[in-house]
Image (tube, rainbow, N blue to C red; front, side, top):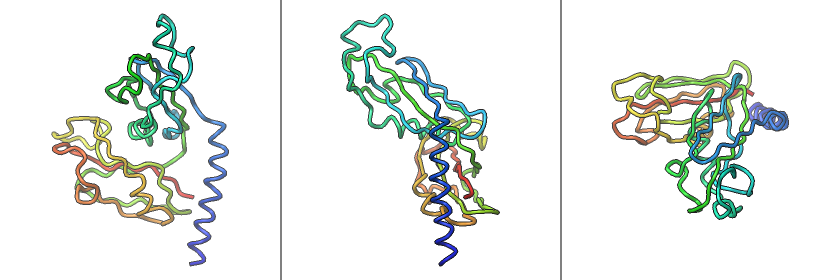
Length: 213
């Protein structure tokens, strides 16, 4: 019991220090409606911190647009962060179009933009193809899951005849944290019986980004 408490204290201290350091390394990008955001990490993996698809000022992405399309400064898409996280967290790079079909239209008639802030975090990654099992483990410290998705975010990972779409998102971060955080090792089971089926007929995989603290 004492060892477990010490492990959690160590984890909390590390997260506090990591959070302070991460604030210094935040990357920010803004792309106008109709263009695409391309977050990228040369070192580490993407962790989206903030995101908004909408408009919060009159000057950004304003060139050539009439005043009535720029006047709404209270235009926000509440799901922006979860959408960006589902598409980008735990990856080296990603592409997200700043369009209504991805984020919906929070303010009809307003010309919008996508404002994203993210970090590149040092972490390990694990990929388990559907209907397979694997184990993540820490030789030193304990597991802390940063992001997990059961679905498919590209066509190259776990190649299969049924790998037909790169847009199958089913975030499982909370589920994997409850199963694995604070442990030395954790068994993963990439199965519909565990995570349900987010895209019927598509061959999926479980990807997990984690650190050892």
